[in-house]
Image (cartoon, rainbow, N blue to C red; front, side, top):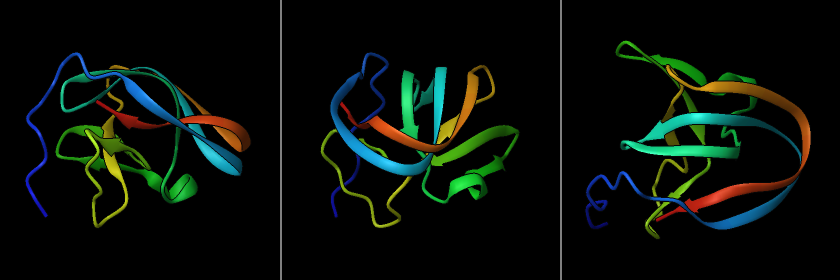
Length: 99
């Protein structure tokens, strides 16, 4: 597997996926690799996706980065400065990839 592209502060959603009956979060000002994320993300492990990583509150989200597929199947999204709403049994579109 090749290395992930460097941080891109202007990365934005490039692909969406339709999900059904999943746990998701709606975020405003969440961060991944210094890119700001606004929208709905599918959580990798439902309510168990939230964790403290260092001093940051994060969520494991199913999200691609510049076409990279990751073995773990999730990205740690930083939520410290974000507005977050948990969406139980969510059906609709989620951000699937950023680039």
